[in-house]
Length: 250
Image (cartoon, rainbow, N blue to C red):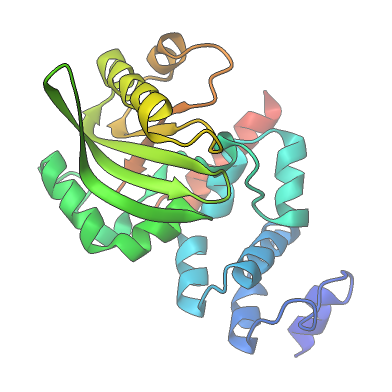
């Protein structure tokens, strides 16, 4: 109780503001960074995270991963409003952490095996994707000019009112992978989405990527196609915090 008083007496936050359990607050009080702690309080309350899910999101360094993809103004907003989804970029993480699928970091597996592991743990994957996601299907086929194509995973984000297509790559991404996703997105925009829905989002989820290749391949002011890495072990919070410090010093 003394620690609770010392932690929250100087802020507006209280247990009355966020209807979280005492066990949640026992965990939150151990987060030294006030902005980070505030972010997890907001998200735990708004998303009804269990204590286990709160611990998992903290262990996966969700806050640090979001900070790396945002400017200073947007980072500040995380601690004031939580994660606000207004544009496709707001929902993208890099990297995505898939430790729950149980694949060792350096093991040999196929894209089909990776996909099946994700489907087996779909609830966990939806939580990792973030707010507003609903699963539509796997290996979703579409056809034109008598040629068949399949999208690995199709989701819908109700906050963005957009289809979200995910293609899985177990190696390093190349420009052909991005071009293929661009074709998938174009097809959905022209033949699948409704006039009242927003443009389709495409995410190529890969084991590794060259940021220069991605930047040169994709158009300027890109708002639809994204390349993000995934990893199957929990990230090092120390390494991510070092990346944040380097970013702030640039």
